Image (cartoon, rainbow, N blue to C red; front, top):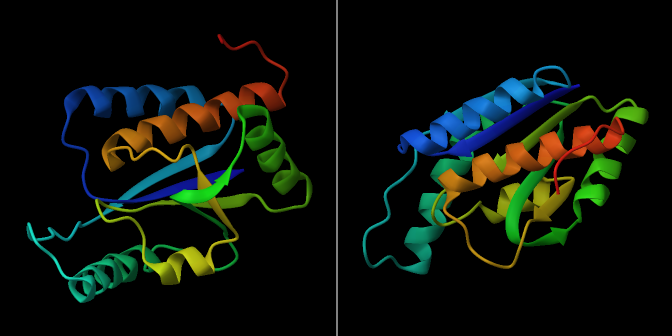
Amino acid sequence: MHIQVLAVGKIREKYLALGIAEYQKRLSPYVRLTLLEVAEEKPPAKISPTGETVLLEKEAGRLEAYIKPGTHLVALAPRGKMFSSPELAAYLENLGASGQSDITFLIGGSLGLSPRLLERAHLVLSFSPLTFPHQLFRLMLLEQVYRAFKIIRGEPYHK
């Protein structure tokens, strides 16, 4: 299985980069993992709804340049469907069983993802109605994907 994480913005904090690298290593026996970052647009302190739309569309264009045809697209957004860890594991396992071995997760920037990308996604997934920093969320996503593969394989993982 190949999992690609497309994210807006660069990881700036060393502790997050170290955590992400750790989960990349942990995931290597289970999946081929690709992490790609695209440039983030810096919103002004006060931005109009039109300005937000323009900003999101610029970021969406950058993300779309890396979305491969035929990939199963999962957009991460606070208003998406929520899964438990076992439910996420079952979802990923079912994709693999149905021959869908290429999955792309999209993580937006500080303003989220363009509505166009949310509509294009096969699944809009939420980890919580809470808002998380998009840099931290990459680490959270990789941990949950790792946990999912441990569940799929029936391997122990701390609770």
